[in-house]
Amino acid sequence: MKIGIIGGGAVGLLFAAYLNDDHEITIYTRTQEQAELINREGLLLVSQNRHTVKKVSASRMSEQVKREEMLIVAVKQYQLTDILSSIGDIGIPLLFLQNGYAHIELLKKLSSDSIFVGAVEHGAFKQSGNSVEHTGMGKTRIAAFSGDLALLPFSYHKNNDFPFVWEEDYREMLIEKLAANCVINPLTGILGVKNGALIENPHYYQVFEALFHEISHVLELKEPQSHFERITQICRNTSENTSSMLSDLENGRSTEIDSILGYAVAEAKVKKKEIPLAAALLSMIKGKEAGEGNI
Image (tube, rainbow, N blue to C red; front, side):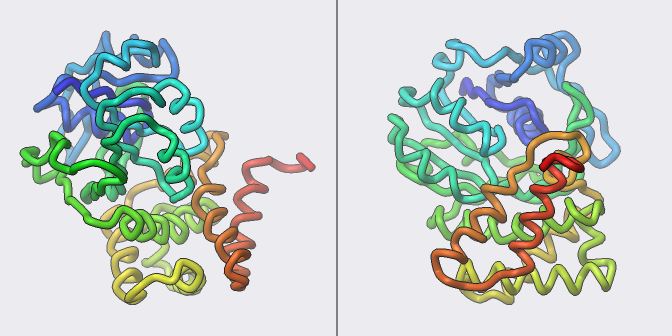
């Protein structure tokens, strides 16, 4: 199948590297420089001390995207509005891999009747414009927002290093991922540590637990203990991974804090619930984004 992947970040490159074995992949990048680099040198996947170069096509975002048979949208949530203006009238299957939950309202405006959402539980680090390291083995959970999951070409994808799992309820799946992101991303961003430190350092772990209880309260998670154990396991599986939020802050990029913790804080206001630690972390991350003295 001809699959276009919109986004040349860590997740987009990781998906391109693994799906390239079974499909004709084109990565749509923000810059011409990255596209030319990938076309010239290939895409390097670093996984379990193995280095593999994949021959993948790349192009800047253009009308060519309409020739694909499926699109995987792997950009940050705050970049999504601009992307949707280019693909809003496309009728092919679309898979969205954004963190948070706020993008769901945007998906209702699309023409395609085959829209899917995914929750990526792998650790990935973009080493360069054409190199990605698979830093934590996990899985990708996919649910249908509209349409039939049988339309997706991943049912026969058997790579044990990059498995797919089908879920029935997209809301429950995304809320579970949102809970994990609400805990892991802001804490690693503020503390400046890798994911594993949150459960290995006893002092950080106390804050980890306290923040989870607030998030569980506002998102009204069913069986909170199982959610807590799952988030702890994610930290364990991706212990050497630098979270996307910490990476964004270290590189002077905008974060997805508004669509992650911002969503939870907004829900708390609507439900008249108090989550002071989460609200404080939201302000801290936004302060780090703004930089010192930018009042």
